[in-house]
Length: 430
Image 1 (cartoon, rainbow, N blue to C red):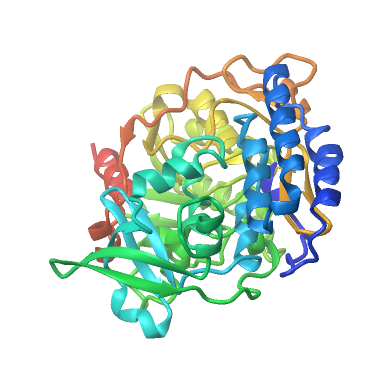
Image 2: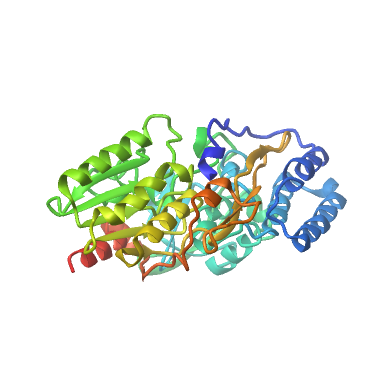
């Protein structure tokens, strides 16, 4: 689903010529008109918003224009109907620091060399607005669950230009941060870095998880298993003296073109057949989608492979999205109580729309996904407008809520702890 739509996407360019009226018309015809996720009431509200945007075009900056269209898409409350905010990394200025939101707050997790002394500071506020206000404002521009919205909030709160356009800052070229560090609270002013090409290829639209991005430069051995080999899409290895098999998916398709998912899964099946493990940990917490058909057979196979007394532990998070959700759905449907879900709520509900396409507006380079086909993993989706793969291979589950809720704290990250894995290994030993 999501990942497969973006294969081959070109890098977004910077500083396009502003022809907002042309882009507004393209948005109406190429995005809103073909997206089927909007109810009649939501579409009427979107039309009202578009009329308001049209009346204000002459006074709008590009940042205000894109934020306004993001709000229009958010009207549908559908995670696949969205402006892809990650494209902003190449379009708008940004602070010389990167944040990480954890269970106990927001921290400066990485910084340009001349601000490296700030790493580890907890961010109390940006331009006088605390984390709850910043995230609440972002909720107007990004649909779906909190965990999924947080995948993209960084591109908003790390750009003084976008914060200013949203009315959350007095200046577009700098931001005022109140931070807590070494037991002291202080206020600092950070100047924005100029607009430049910061990310390329698929990462211009689908960034790696922030926790992976900030961990790449750590010394060998400092990262727990789930952060290791950051460029691998699929991975497996034995744990606990080959008593537990660990399998990780970061997508349901290899967008790098360097790995063969079918060969990978054949290798996993062979390992299971030869060793007959009774405990499997399936790490789907970074799986943001792709082709749900690719992994269906393996997901249905795993519960039977561990036997009646075996268990499969599915690790999930707010980044588990699209075909990542489908994979967990097929697994739970096949395994029932033998499947234990650990982590945070998934990135979307079990009733969503997907299977659309990517549209990049010609002048502003704003990138949108639209959705055309229904997915319902509670009913099995028998309706004619449902995605064909789901109608032919339905998913019917009551819910995919975590059986055990865990989260990552800042101290967990610093110490290289993995609460998801810790809980799975604890349960697997029972």
